[in-house]
View 1 (cartoon, one colour):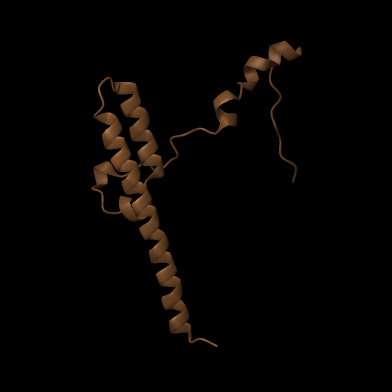
View 2 (cartoon, rainbow, N blue to C red):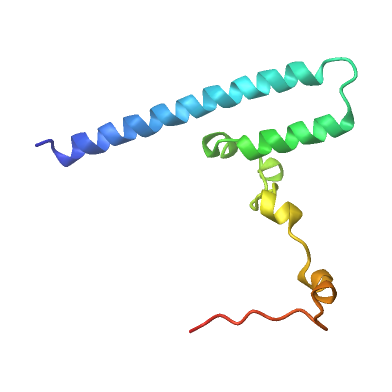
Length: 108
């Protein structure tokens, strides 16, 4: 059986290798973004979309070295498919013949 110190070193090595791979992948994304943004006809909307994509994909091991004013948002910036299309319940209530939306009460 291995000593705990050896196991810790192996786990740290695996973690560092994973971080390295994520940094390499992110660098590839940055290189591609730089190339795309330098193309003629690149719009402001495309730039904003690209920035949001890069921020969402930024590995924590990279973000920790950014200045405070450049840190990625603490909350997710992308909505799930459900959130993006979910209707407001109060808008549906009249269509369902209800005077108001029913409030949900969790069971104890």
